[in-house]
Image (tube, rainbow, N blue to C red; front, side):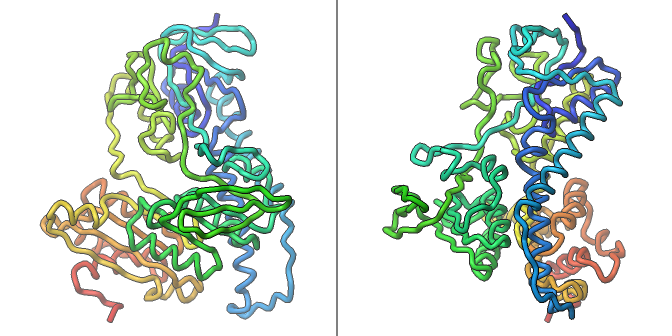
Length: 457
């Protein structure tokens, strides 16, 4: 029986990073994976969706090439090749992780893991066991299924299904207007599919700032995406070629496929956790501030703990958990985890929203600056959107940032750094930002919060 200092179960963003960092620290390390290396993010999430969205962005660029003095008489979209490219990108990155495992001395064990006791893990396929002084659970999450919209993987699809099947349909109803639903809405709209989004709550992206959600809804409608908010699906009837959906307001809509994108559930079943005394809450693994479960030598990271279901948070946890195994006891401040949504236009946010501060009777100011007031936006033909900053008037620091527009998923990093380190707004204003760039919107928005705008009337 092989013995290890650290065994990681799951090789998604949290798991593979934990494995690499563990080996870097000199621990004898193994990663157990029952499927493909890279987990949901690499195989069925972040990377394939963003690869497909990049193809969609290129299609949109061709459609407006005339604005830049480029005449494109006609072009053809080959969906099969778009999906083939997605597979190549994913495969190359998967091989990259496996190469890093070999390079850094991480043993990759293929098979399904089940905990026998707090130090023994059975590999079910090969009837072998491994010993571990420390175990890190990084088993991720799965698409949530609705009772009246169960996945049949043909007409009613999960996000996993739709990434595999491609766009071989002309119309799509997306149930759920969150980040996943809106990203797929952008993708298939650009690919020429008739898209309808149905959201139970009053706004799409209900967890984002209201102004951001409203701006995206207006943008989507201009693009021809139909949106029904504040409604739920009451009935589903299957026809020969289309499915008919009846909404709670009496309206009916039809489409070839339905994508259910209403959230995720933890992948924590059949691991032997309950028998071992690992505490779960509705299936989510409960950890303390240091990512330790109720069993002292068993830790957990990523989606399966339900804290923040984002790949970059899982990767950050993957690094911190190894340091905590070393005994450093490092906490993570999830309030400064940036959220990025790769719709057209992009959305990014971090920190506190204005609506939260209104409830707190807090002395704050708000700055808003539109991309249309930047030279770079006009040069690039990307004038849609704005940045909104919430500023603590007493401390003169940024408390929150919400943005919609070009390149905001990159711009947000400067604001994460500012909020994390409580950087004074005067120090940001005294930092020279290059011109012409989209990042100029940061100091411009700070000036707007001070009612001292240079480039706004």
